[in-house]
Length: 234
Image 1 (cartoon, rainbow, N blue to C red):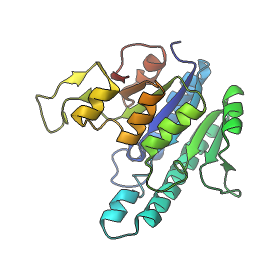
Image 2: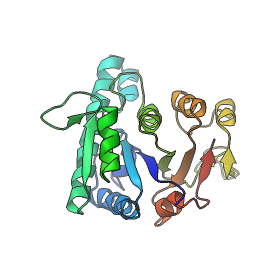
Image 3: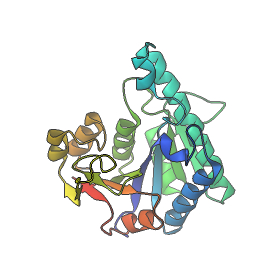
Image 4: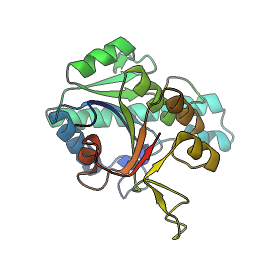
C-alpha cells in the first residue's frame, strides 16, 4: 500500500444521495463498506465529515444569524453525521470511535490527540466530529488539522467529481482536469479544492491532498494503493 494512515474528508452533502436534505441510509452504508474494505487491508483511517446536508454555518450567517452561533449549529450537524456513520460501521463489524472537538461526554469522547492516535494504532476507525471545535473554521481546515495532528500521510478529499478542474466541469464543458497541481497554484488560481486555511496548513506541513470521486466503486482502494486517481495537490 502507498499509505498506511489516511485522513478521509467527506462532505455532509455526500450523505444525502439523491435527497435534497438529510441522510440517505443507503449512501451511508455504501461509504461504510468502502471504509471497511481499506480497514481490512490494514489502512488506519481517520474521518472528518461536514454538516452541510443539515446546516451550514456560513449560510446561516449570510441570512442574518450571528456567525458564532451559526457555526456552533454547524458543528452539531457534523456530529449527527458522525454518529450516523459510526452506527453504519459498527453494524458492519468495524471498530470505530467518534471523538468530538466539543465536550459531549454523554454522547461521545472528547478529542485528545494521544487518544485518537492510540485508537488508530489499535485498528479502530476514528471519526472526528464538531470540526476544530471553534467557530470560523471549516471542516476542510479540521481535516487538515486533524490529519497533521495524528501524523496521517495524506488527506483524501472525497467529492462528486473526479479531481480538480480549471473551472466547474458541470458549468464549463471546456474545463480540464489536473493530474497534479501545487499548493501555490491552487491559491494563485483560486481553485476551490479546500479553503485557503486548509491549503496553507497542508502546504506548511508538506501534507499531500488527493481529490477524487468516491462514488466510483474501487476509487478509494485505488487511492490508498497509490494509483493515479483524481488530482494530487502538493
